Image 1 (cartoon, one colour):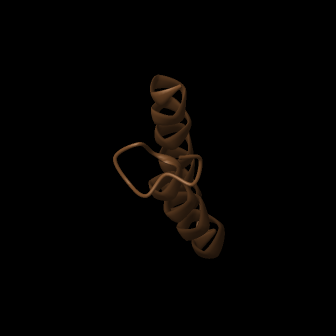
Image 2 (cartoon, helix red, strand yellow):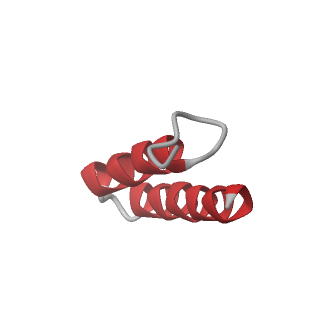
Image 3 (cartoon, helix red, strand yellow):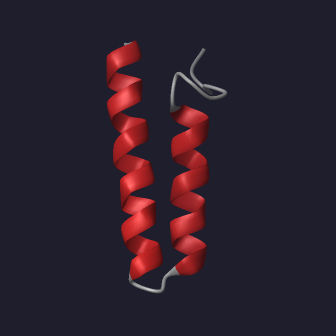
Length: 47
């Protein structure tokens, strides 16, 4: 489960960074914050 959350967090953060490059600032920031919250290194909302 930890590995799955970590992979999901990485995907969300990378998607957020790409959204920032496409000038979708709000969407990019939201994706990055959600990725940091989901990741096991951050404050995981699933545990």
